[in-house]
View (cartoon, rainbow, N blue to C red):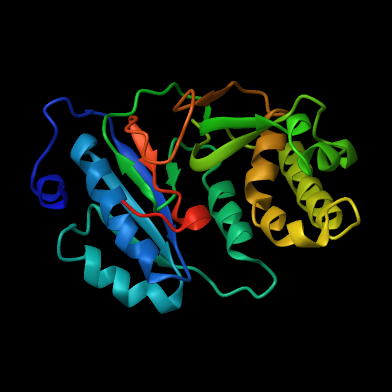
Length: 246
């Protein structure tokens, strides 16, 4: 399939222009998975330009994978600045916030595209996962949140776009508050010691999920439901969570 994606274009491809950002860090396997994500997306959306945000360790490997097949007009490589104060989830959040006011897409590397996007110009996530009140320890976390509401929901950020929405100063202030809130509550007795690592790893997902509900725009989703390798318009192997691959 990879060769077909690289050489062809879907008969039902989208004619829209897309700017797509993908973050590649820590593990070469993400670069390998990104090859599937990039070429399957281009197969269905040929008018696309990719920006790959890579850490120093993966930069050369990523160049060797993509530079021979993608022209300079289709590919930009950006080195992620080293920051010991931020984990990779917070670095991803920084990249996403830098897309404010644009229709650019942020994609996880472990996605495979089976069709063309058809979304509105609005803030869009991959899928709504669950309401916080339905799942521990998030029901306890949301109770401690000043910004989050009782019926707030966790949204999957494997796909994200602002859809042209531009964050206001008040929006940015709320995001900073939500980040600090989340860090504090994860390190508190609200979250059990055994859960702290896994809960801490979804900080960017929690912050965007909660804060997007306060923005002056509609929030939409690419999919109504999602499972690993479900054959939908876009599917994930959930490599980060399960180690699974395509």
